[in-house]
Length: 553
Image 1 (cartoon, rainbow, N blue to C red):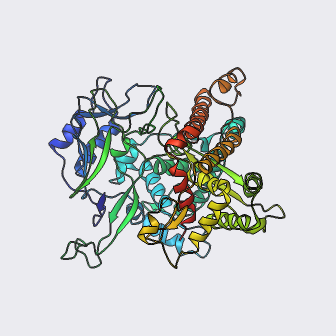
Image 2: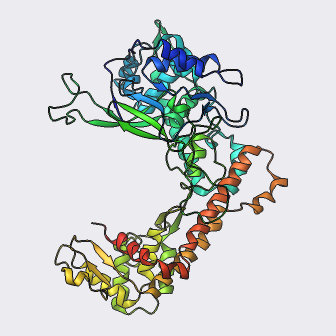
Image 3: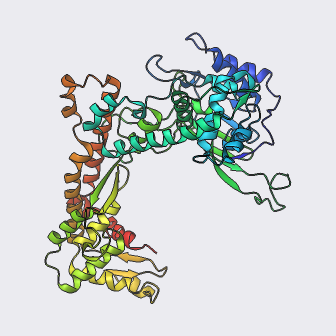
């Protein structure tokens, strides 16, 4: 979607009956909305946002589920739920940096010109400062109704867990999530240092603004991380105008901007179901609305029939459980969905050890060719492991996704497990890169193990036995990695309930359980694609995986 930036922070004067309708639509059988949300809806309408009169704001299960958009009447598939014209104000970092109401523009300029300045004023710092100031003084800014309606607390992310609680959970958390928590905390403290220095230069009514504490900044920062939407924002052409030439082409360019989008960000996330799920188990239905970019507006339309009382959900992206917990404060139930992924690292030495085992009968020529191909693929750094001494061993990062085959691992395994004849044929075919390529007759030769097609791309055709061996080797790696990547889950974790650490609350404990159970399911689903019978029916993806990791140019 494209947001056309408005010339200034002013808003259109529209509203009237439409604003009243929105406020009226907010009344529910639960007793109506709080005043802040009602004002937000009226204010959003005045900025041209259109909200269906079939929806309201509330919780599907008060006290259990978070506030979101609810259908008050049945909504048909394809029906418009929200429409956001491109004339709406784009609340992004540029809007915040240009603020004159609180003097942010001058404060940022003063900070950036200071010889003792620290880090850069990032888009997140600018937006966080604007949100914090608007929350303090909502009556002073057009951004005030939005800031006043935001949740009072940040989402319950593990970023904010007390050290005692986090340490108690460490044995049960994926190592990748622990690393992400640490990186997020470092980022937060770094940005807070910059934001604090800028806030020291802000003056409200001629008086210095109050200091920006860590809690206040963390709240504002997480409002951005958990609620901002990335849009393509049209830059205005120099000299004014709409930025379009006579042919309708964009002269000014388009930027990807993180924008705060009032009302739209009230919609909660719904995961997409696992593709080709074969088991009869609970699953996600997928988002109830999808975004549609049209002429002059961005519209959210129903992807299916939404019944009265049902939540109107959207998608924040095909995110992993770890990302959802880290930045949005929840792990979905059920934990298995299309975004599930398990991340892990393997030292290069473990792959070299595997090569010594599966290719121990190689001749000198095929051993050199296999090593060269693995270096080319990126699996090995340099021939014979040079550069891994003195504790500087190289580690490779892998991801296994529930909705995808493990192509990188399979490509490496294919090179390690294919026959000597096949590895030499692949090596010879690659020598034609940049030189001669196969003609059409050679490309159609079913007996060719490897060739470069007419477009200059490598194609590989391994025998069934090589595919089987590659699949078994990948399954072996996953068996070794799974306990380290997943740890206890399901019944194993349930058995630990009686000894749950006192420092860990029930919500965090069961979020951890869902995280682990879903991670184990990633391995279960992935291993099915590696079974011998499966590879007999559809083993060509191993060939594609081998070619993919070698087509690096």
